[in-house]
Each structure stands twice: as C-alpha cells, then as structure tokens.
Length: 246
Image (cartoon, rainbow, N blue to C red; front, side):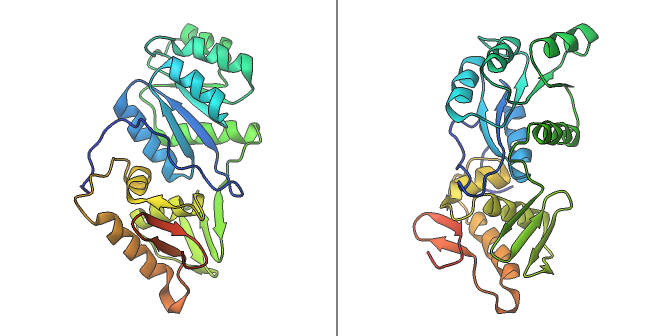
C-alpha cells in the first residue's frame, strides 16, 4: 500500500477546468469508510466529488457549490437526511439519490415522498450506484460525460479504453485512473496530495515517491514514438496536463 493513511476528507478536491466540466456530486454520509470508498470510486469515474458528514454541512455546501447531483444517506447526525432532502428539493431540482439501510416499502415510499429521485438500499453494489447516478444525471441534462478528450488524447470511461493520436494506449488500471484524473482536470495544477486523494483515495504522507513513479510510468506510455509531453511537472508543486511546458 502506498504511503498514505485512510482518513475522512475535510477539504474540497480541486475543481475541474471551467471549459471542461465534470459533473459535481455532493456525497453525504456520516460513515468515514463509506465516504472514502465512494469518493474514490466516483473520482475515478471522472466526477468532481465534495463530501459532507452531517445534514447542516450538506445544506451549506449545496447552497455554495450547486452540485449536479446529491448522494444522501438517510441517517445523519443533527439534521436527518429526509429533512435535508426536503430543503434541497424546495430550493432546486438537482437529482437526489438516497442511501439507507432500511429496506421496507414504507421507508422507500417515505424517501421518495420527501423528494428523492431514487432510493438505494445498503449494502449496495457500487456499479448499481454508478448506473443509477448516471441515469439521474442524464435525465437532468447535467454535465455527466462518458468520455474525455484533450489535445490528441481520448479516454472512454464505460470501456476504460484510452487513445493517443487514434492509437490505443495499453494502460494498467492505476495508469488509467491517473489519466482520467488528469483528463478531468485539464491545465490545473494538481499537487501530489491531490493526486493521492483522487487516485488512491487516501491522504498523502509524503514519505514515498510512489506518485512520481506512477506519473513516470504513465508518461512513458503517453510519449511512445516520440510524442510530445502532455503531463508536465510543476516545480515544487506537482503535475498538470498541458500542451506546453509549464
């Protein structure tokens, strides 16, 4: 395991480039393990994920960042998820996917009556959550996308295929996830700490060069045949996806 340690997030991830937006999802759950796991999965699929651990924070964040969708747990400390759902629905039409451990019909009906667009029972399959979230975003005509393109790079998210200048790139799972993060944040300065959070899902402790090694391996495949460098090094900061040397 890389030199990171698992911990709940307290800060927002870097936002995507304003000309190439990814769907922004507000993820609300008071379980740090659920937050960390789901945030990692969603970030790898190209979502811009912001997290909250209670209802009050969720409402403040929703007002501030205007997410494209909300994944909301019913059982929250303080303001419960149903009340949060009521207030979110009163203020906007953003898609809301509710999560709950309660699997009775009255519980599901209650969630929908409070304004949720869909309802998922814990424990759930992550692929089902992704499919439901994509369906909600499509119906809301949000910025969700199935592919990214930058310069002569293209990534297809559903098939996990990547191409440069039309030629397939044979990437490992880690290299693919790293490339998706760069592609969903073009021209942004991404620190090693941010890359560790977005790709590995854990805070970076700075005791290893595993991020640099992963970037080096990705670069080697991107630059096969003498192709120009796209993943640039930012001195004393990290990396960025740009067409010219930073």
